[in-house]
Amino acid sequence: MTKPTLVIGAGVIGAAIALDLQRRGRRVILIDRDAPGRGASYGNMASIAVTEFMPASRPSVWRQIPGWLLDPEGPICVRPAYMPRLIPWFWRFLLASRPSKLRELEAQGAALCARALADTQEMLRDLGLSDQLSDTGCLSLYADETEFAADRERIEMLDRFGFDYEVLGHNQLHDLEPEIDGRITKALLLPDNRTVRDPFRIVTELVNRFEAAGGTVERAAVAGFDRSGRIEAALLADGRRLECQEVVLAAGAFTARMAKQLGEPIPLETERGYHTQIMDPGVSLSHSIIWPAKAFMVSPTAGGLRIGGTVEMAGLDTPPDWRRSKITVCRAKEALPGLRVKDSTEWMGHRPAMADTVPVMSASAKTPGVFYATGHGHLGLTYAATTAKLMGQLIAGERPDLDLHPYRINRF
Figure (cartoon, rainbow, N blue to C red):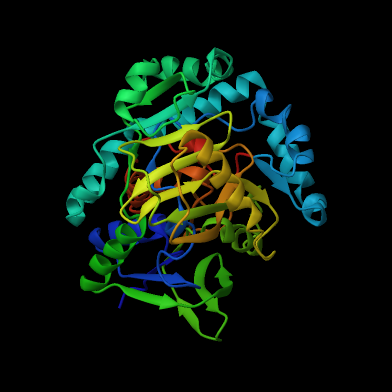
């Protein structure tokens, strides 16, 4: 019998890749230390955010980082004890801020985002979940002309790559969303930034289809690998050895540890994200909303409103700081005065952040049979269907629809 392909990581990206490879005739085993979809895919902001590919490494961001770090309620928090471990990552982050490099990174993000909505729609149709995707877009809010001008960099980027938007004045905005505070005077309507009603359900259905077609799901931690010229097996923490034809590393922020074991360290960190899910918010929204100056997002989901937006750099093992989720709720109340926090839950998860904010979608440069699909940052759900299609083509030996050279693992 042909040895299986192992896909490590059962979030939305790993599950989508596993199903794609299975349909290409491979015998696939999907492995995760947790239940499928219980990592970052469970708590993401439920957004297909096709306009949010601006590199975080741009100078306008890193010049603000010192002030943010000194502000206990700032949009970025770094645990002091973790700071020394971040120095190499921040150095890569700064190297990615050169103007010529930023233009390259923008183009690489735009190439993925330009096809993300169509690929997501196709995936959801195939799963019988088309109704999971909203018809309405996202509203980017501005209290005044000063805030709007401060976002010019992003608007100019959208113009360069031809992404749709519409500038709305006060009356147009409040006709669309009467619950938004009247002091907010302007907005961008981003029509292709859609909201998913239940991201976890999408992962669940991907895995259900995979298992129904004979796929195997293993709940186990991967402790290491056997190699001899090419990949031979994954070694599980429970002592088992799973022989394989190929391994796809799609374990989000946890991929960094496995890449290091394989001799390919990558500048991948966890951006710990927090959200608050409010089942009885007392207000309703037709669109998702973001407020760039306040650094939060609100998404209408099947379970009420989901509020998030903060970033914490503290590694994979530090306990959550639930003050981070409460900060975004307070800011959301500035936009939605009628918002009440009733019947709510809080969540923290690990978003896999590359120093240049562009994912790795690549064959290994060192070990034949090893492939990487990680580092999607805030855009894991956005890029999932596209990543599965491109990685399926790459692993099958086909020419991918998109040139994957910019996303190679040895680009650093």
